[in-house]
Length: 176
Figure (spheres, rainbow, N blue to C red):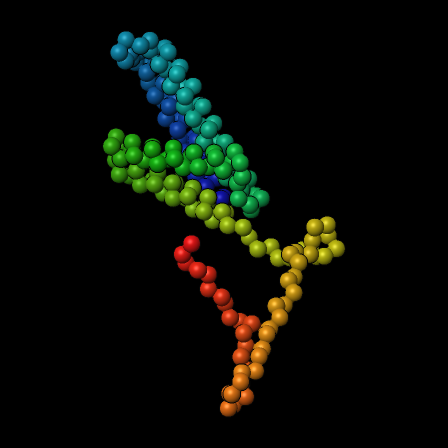
């Protein structure tokens, strides 16, 4: 799962950077202006924004790659980055629904589902088994002594049965 997310995030990083770079080139070539803004500033900011956004997605892909290689859940900043890229994909999906169409929306929702699946599948601690007792800190948890069983012979039982009172659970009062 983490390998798939790594490749998807890398593709998304390249796609976002390429689209923003293309938009910056178009603005620069057409000498466009929006509300009196300098076309050169618009072109440069689009290109810089595309590179920064692409690097952000590449960093998130690196976190997913580390999850795949280590086969462990992301922790700390890595987990925050994967959660944040999931939120970014959700917001981009909502914007894509209105501006681009259902194809882009569904693609971004598939990426979002992969990210959530990655975060959820590596969330549970794995049972690695008990470590040998000779390793430092090994041996697992100490074993508890078995609870004593109290048996009593009831008076007047014609069959001579004994009552096993060790397995009786006492109820706690429900009112203070």
